[in-house]
Image (cartoon, rainbow, N blue to C red; front, side, top):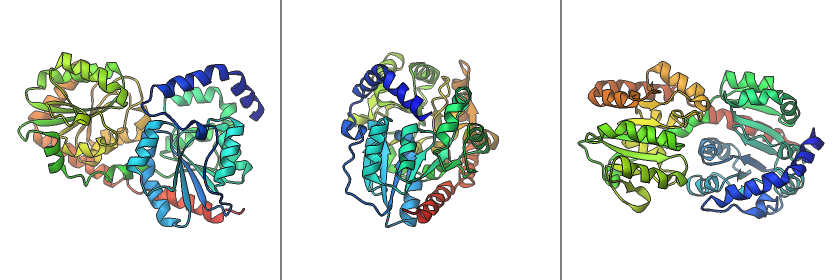
Length: 419
């Protein structure tokens, strides 16, 4: 399988190389192409006291933070090399995870020569992969240099699992390079076993631990900074991902704008401009957070603020699920004790969404008019908001501790590693 994979990479390079370059050019910050080619500039260290921790982009970096903090506490003499794939992930790590890693690098492209070159420079005793980012040559190179390999906070979505089963032969070969698969839920565990995962355990979801890290935000100061009125209900919209979702949410809130004030955070900052244009057409005036503007409809076009901004919400609307995109992180607003409204397509947060629905902390909207009615009902019944918020807080508090379990597993592998 190794040879087949690498021959295909070579044959398909006229397709994926231009595609990768085009995707990168759309970003405001370009990746470090030397690092993407395996040229990692790190001082030599051959004692094995390095852990290579890979997180793809913003969501994975944020979810990794409580795990990294636990690793630092357990293994203070180890260096953590944190790798990311996207420039937005790199920026988030620089701005939000300072002190939780020793070196920040871009993940090499999964070409065997690039990965071997990078692994020779890093020389980790343990390689940790966050959630679902499985690359054949990366794991193969790790084993060439004798590193232990772990998948942490692992998940396999409803959408990806059927596709993965169709090429199960590939995943069986790939997962032979993974020593332990530490998954979020029993469903995820059963799925990765079916694909060939070894030493599978269920340790929970670190995003619950990450979510509570933002609940100490100063809500009063944030309200002043955002120019929020105490006489209106605050609706925070988190991580809408495409034009259809944006238009659905804006159109549904439009009849209520005389009674609410809105903070709207698109999942990708490049959506800020078209979102602003649509809000201007549908609602009227808007403000951009990046410009320090305040208005009844604010666009949160900044990195890393959404988690704390949920602290000022009376109602949260979480995107990614109104269109069939798998959903976005509903755990953050739940941690703040905010009632959450989301769409029906929450496959990527299946366990959290199911648990929140069972606890009575969320409302699912799927049809035209549903969102307007749900928001209006919560506006008119503050007792219902309070009850849902209390259910949300209790759910989060009962789901903590996964990050410590993951860090314990990583530390155990590091302590037993032999050069």
